[in-house]
Image (cartoon, rainbow, N blue to C red; front, side, top):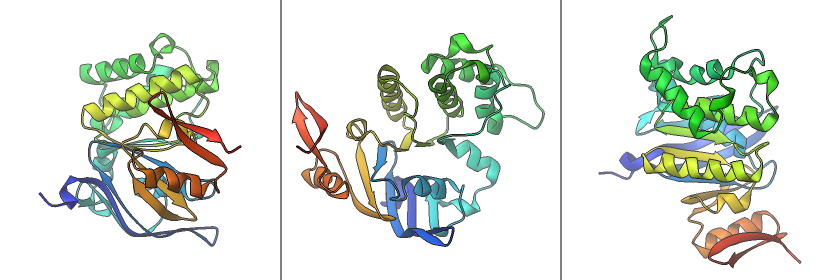
Length: 258
């Protein structure tokens, strides 16, 4: 099996310009299948832009492959079955019921104007149960807090059951216990073979990933496992050594530099 065959997502020479400014500058990246990869870096490094470009949500120059196939050659409906997306600050009608919002994640699997199948119903229920949002299923989004809405949008992404899942700041508005729940969900996704690529500001949580992509000024400064000293050093460097990553009771902990 070739190296390309085991890569879930590959980018070559990825360039993105926004407002006349180069945000991604000839970026190359390969994301391994069935693993959780986390993108970290300071504000303005291009993390969210990278995820959107990989998902096809922004115009970009260069090549992007999903599971060995060039993304541009994949029909849009098939793209929606291949990749689930959870973005930050997504606009969703607040009048929609929670159950209906999560059912939107099943649309790529349904025929045009067809009613949801028993499998669709079961997938939506499972996603709502996994995010502890099942009890709100009949409520509107307007009745929920920001953190509760975030859990509903995560359930929508889970309901799609796609082999690739991209999440941009999925921990936004989540309190610490539900951040831990999210981490457990990611581990479950990885166990079932899903490739997860996320952007996190929470470096301590990111250090639980299989690999880290450390970005600076639109480029990949480092890509490696959290267990590697070079990865932790790269994180400290892109944050101008204002943080330290230290082992405490068997876990890596991020502390401000004294």
